Image (cartoon, rainbow, N blue to C red; front, side, top):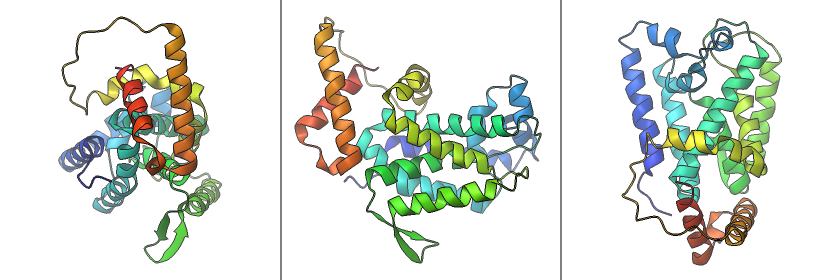
Length: 259
């Protein structure tokens, strides 16, 4: 496993820190303009479903979120590649925001933070590395699969109180649910492909592409998609380290057909 910071994580850290610094000079204006306010989302201020992730309420809020992003996200990005990782992350952010909006559509309380995406990352990490040990509260060791179940149960119980709060419990649950569906359903993944590849281009520099070759026959494309699905299932069952060099090459060729 490579030790340097992957580009997707590096970009997300930089953007979140830049927004946090800017927040300190706006006196709450940025939260009102970009935070996830369900009633305003219903009024077609759709950008809030995306922008709320870059705002944080305190130093410790952003510290813990960025630490979790680095700790768990880098493993996924090295395994999947930057494009696929960012597509997954932004899908979880949108899913988290949508569930939070649907559950309390008339709320005027702004929800902020990257937690929706991070809870999706936790689910993905547990599916890919189920037996990895995570220390709850930095003290109690737990396997990743049990840690995520516990966190999900705690968030569900907390959301049952139903009080509006900047700690958006339904957004956390939405991120977890979206992440699970994304990884378990090929059809769900394909819905967001074109939109989220465009978002990910903001963080990833693109190298010049060679001249386009003649399109492959349809049968070869179908065979490639089937092989990619098989490899993804293998990653979920056995982890990214189980992939052979040939399988990694298949994933690189498939990624190149998507952009």
